[in-house]
Image (cartoon, rainbow, N blue to C red; front, side, top):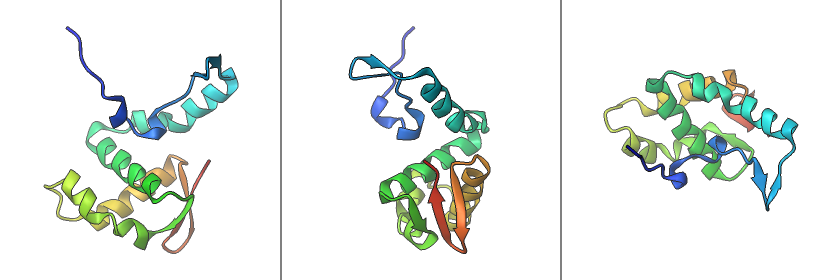
Length: 117
């Protein structure tokens, strides 16, 4: 039995280029990218959805340095994705800690963050 995977639904962080413009990417680069996001795959499924959604929201901000207040502006969007959660802001902060622990972002100051490249 087959299945359909909607590639548009996969966050950019989950896409690792192996071939670009018909040329293979350097093996070391592919391995680095895989190691960078490996922690996301190891999260329990109950937590992974929130983590990926918050990371996608951060990416939609379109900048590498951002503030918690900017992420809070996407609260209604995250609430819509997780309608049974009534504590969205605390969940956002929790997921920022998860992303920090996965070394995907850094806390730079109170309420200030930076995505690692």
